Picture 1 (cartoon, rainbow, N blue to C red):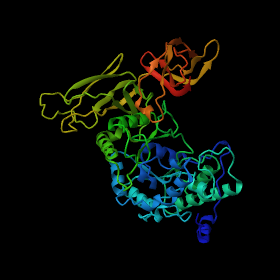
Picture 2: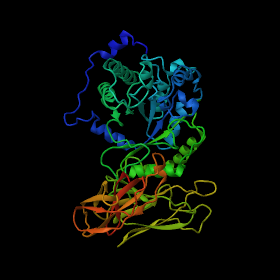
Picture 3: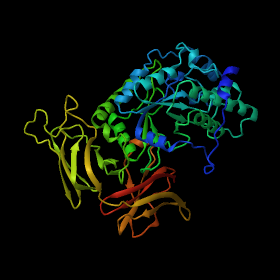
Picture 4: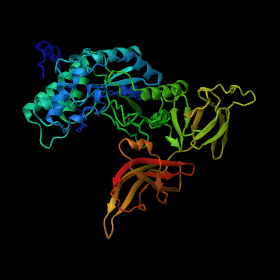
Length: 549
């Protein structure tokens, strides 16, 4: 590792005092400002970029170093950077595409676990200026992102496999014994100086995502960034950041889900399975309905350009966003995330509700459909429209009535609307249509149910018991509760899975705990479980938990 020049140390060290953890939080430091977290929540949708020199091989980013032979590590660290030249990297094009897709911020991998730095660092020779590209790629990214009017975010890994390799330690993420104190001191100094560089060289940074190094390494990084840039929002390391999954229920607290388009974060040239643009739009809708941010990943090719399928997905999302963007921008959760395949977002100050009509693949242009919203009550000032449509006409169908009609009935707000807009040349559009409802109110006070940890009981045979608790009855008197369950599909595959099985139900009349035995035999499988509660008008779910049985 290079020694940092004395002058740089003096610049960074002058008047530098580390912030201290809050007294009421002994687990981790969290100095995110409330107003900045609210600003972050309103952003709603961001682009994640995983890019490093090992993209040349199309393999998992960084992790191939763990458990690798000395020969592999030597060639990985000393030879592979010599051919890294992302000459077609165009940060302005990427930022503009992100903006079209509705994204409000970008988070770029400044350093992943390998330790390879994508900026002109003074802390190590293992960086992009010592490649044929030879330029500070982070500066180019920051300038282009700001030019597009997007917020600037950094990903930074406190873990550094190259540091471990240089110090003759096994390359791994978890150590059975603590790292020797003298080496740990150098480790902490390295990440401290790297975070100082990132906070000092590129102006105001809006967001930072720390991945790995939980404990002293990550805490040191957070101390540095909050001291140098108090307005920065730390996501991973300070708020919930589910990976390759979403929260099961809406949350009042800020959260951010990071999701890949395929199965891998960095570029994967072969054997990749991409989500469709329609599925990605559904994931965005569900995230916003539950009060979260979606950080959708792209992995540039070794030359810096985006893979064709990733660009195509983003352009499909851009078309949908151009029509429906207001429905996912600066929104809050409704009284419940969804009624079946209809999802909701809410602008309480305006009393405006958005209803997303998802999973309708065969809605022909010019045809009318009817929907009933059970959680919504209209007022005398209510208006209902389809986003992007005037309601005046259907092209080439002069006799078709394109208006949207609604009527409040006992079982809910009934809406009749036409898909009138021509988006594709063949008039087919399989992505969600969005209804805008102004001046509406909730039709009920929903109950609240918790999914608790499942238990395995032993006896003559093992059996599984699902546990839940009704914590709020809402405006219901007698309600039915039960559980849904499914086999856990896998870390990446979970978002493709939406088929649930159900247990029987039991009736409750007050806040209470409840348990049900599903008809399952020991199988060595892992299951996802969520409680539900049936209100007379609709069903409400609890969060999702996992159990092995």
